[in-house]
Image 1 (tube, rainbow, N blue to C red):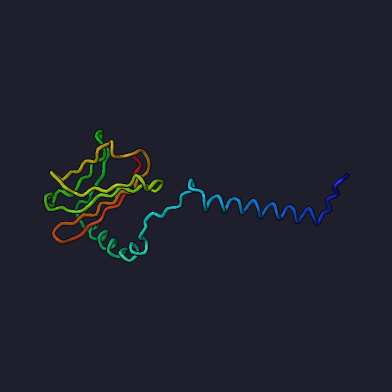
Image 2: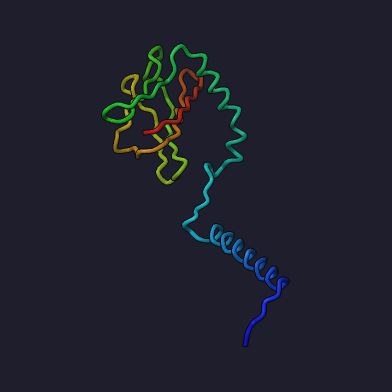
Length: 150
């Protein structure tokens, strides 16, 4: 017995195969754990409301004679704070965010013994990092952001 396939049946079969193909990928991306969908920030609405504060901190940092700098040294990353401030009064935090893997993000409180803060080499994984230094002194807040490849 020979099966004869007409052209309308062929079109219907090809459209059905295409729909099944698309639905397979939608299912795969939506429900399988290896396709992890995570946000950069879990509280992105709250972060958006605080964005004006970040803009004000960045403007304060622009007005400084000397800004925070980051340089790669043999031991790791060296973060230099402005030398015209008393380092003992500088408070804040240093955040490292990895866009490709939020599980290795970390944050340090700023506790200075000098105008330099060293982040050891073993704390950092090679790749691209978004560094955020959020610091304050004398009731004035500053923000320094930099993208770097370690």
